[in-house]
Image (tube, rainbow, N blue to C red; front, side, top):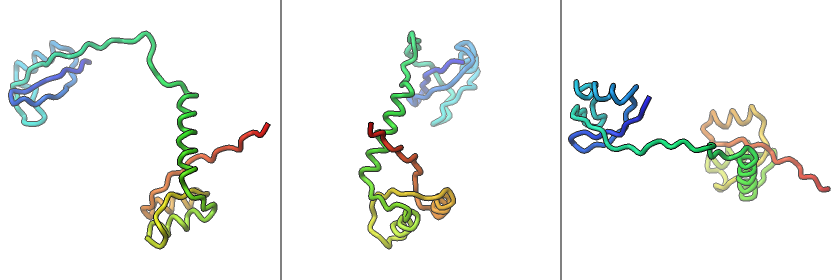
Length: 135
């Protein structure tokens, strides 16, 4: 499969997938390729940048991802008020405008979390940071 950059006579640019360049040429010649914006069948190829394969994929390592996630959770936790086990009640109070709107954090059971979500109250369950070793 190849991805081709195409343009119609009205100037709309779009991408399309084909089994080969020859298949595109055959379909374009019989006007089977249409612009998704205006349905124009006068379509031609645009120059495409070649795909260059790198020696090794540039992927973030698992420790990097885990560290970034831990840092994000710590930042969110530091910026939110800890309401402890009152989390479900306080989330409802904020949602129904019975309490000031603010970021909160705390503990909730799975059942409580599901009830909040069913009520349309946006919550984001996050793992609790483990206790840090003191030695």
